[in-house]
Amino acid sequence: MNKKRNKESDIEEIAERAHRGEDVSRHFTGRHVAKQKIDVDLPLGFLRLIDEECKRLGITRQAWIKMACDQMLQQADTSQGLAKVS
Image 1 (tube, rainbow, N blue to C red):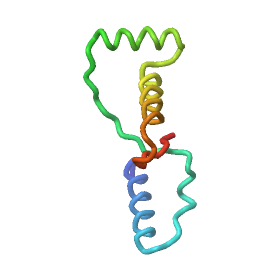
Image 2 (image 1 turned 120 degrees about the vertical axis):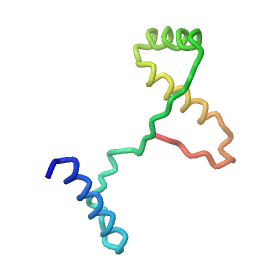
Image 3 (image 1 turned 180 degrees about the horizontal axis):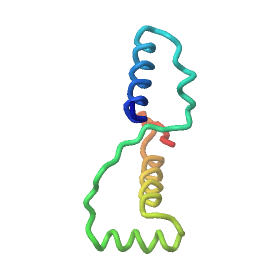
């Protein structure tokens, strides 16, 4: 059995145990945050400006976009129930 299939079996076993109400917390370290990959179409000129800022700051485009999104969310009205995302 290959490693991927073995990992899938382990995940399914953990899920079944959790469904039965067993404590499976030892399998979760809190080190990983759920993520979802997205595609965003941006104008080329906009990307060039982002890239200039990234070069100035010494960070990647992805890091800059995450930082910009985080800053905008922090500015949002917290009365709407927006939670801090790490």
